[in-house]
Length: 436
Image (cartoon, rainbow, N blue to C red):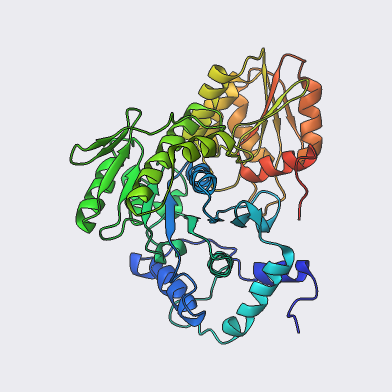
């Protein structure tokens, strides 16, 4: 008999394990309980990851896009590919995919029901209570094992060193662009954040990264050296090792995902593909070109045709906001930008606003339904000195989007950004997705 009469009942049970405080651990040893707890869960579940070949992707920006790119490259080569990412946009099932097919409601219900006896008997005393993220990862690994995937691409949830995904020893590790985010948990300096991200590097496992800030790169280099892990750099010129070995990209690193930052992610994904070849996976050049051409990843520089057009992007820190504006100016022709902005309480709204608001001819503030959404009055206080046009506030994303459409002329561009949760709500308002 099923534990859950409906899919919604299963989700309600899953979300009972959310930690609403999201408080950082007091010490590194306490943070390591995330790994110990996940290892204990995997042991209790029979080690579903044991036979899986994995790629682990960390970073501040671009890790989800990079994971999607790697998945697309491998799938184009005829491999069966698992993909685990977070957060989701409109359906929890987006987090667990095989060959870009979402886990079905019935499969998720069955996976979670099978875990209930394990969870009922799990002792939280030594390592703490399992989290919703832990259970999602465990279900993903079980699903991938059941589907007999050839390779699984796993995106780190938060940070790297103490993230539950880091119990996995992958074939290849990848680190996308590192910038400031989640400072309360990962550290106030870029060096601290980089140290946390570099924690995914495992003994002897090759790791590939993109060009990083001067403050971040030495932490990656030091960790790779400490672990005896071959370090590769996905540069514009090719894949370069720390010892001077160079491999040209076998195809042009240009994907269906638009923007300069996505070119960087494409180079990183190709670097991973080259290292997977060395590990024995067959990834022909034609498949790599096909995978780049056919990749999709919603809410990342996603242009929705219309009059005016709407650009949806999940940029949620100062660095990604600045890169978004640069890409807008180089990739899209428009007269004025109308900005629809909302973010979460833990984000640096001052940095986001400084990058985008002065370039906007009009600003509409909104918020998602997520409990961590930032209050509009707080955003307004930050953006007001930067305004070059009217300011409107509406807490409902669909209504706020309609307001932005009313402010924009046919040659203008509406940009929805600041949060993946706001981006998701905008996509739902436009009929591009249905909340589940």
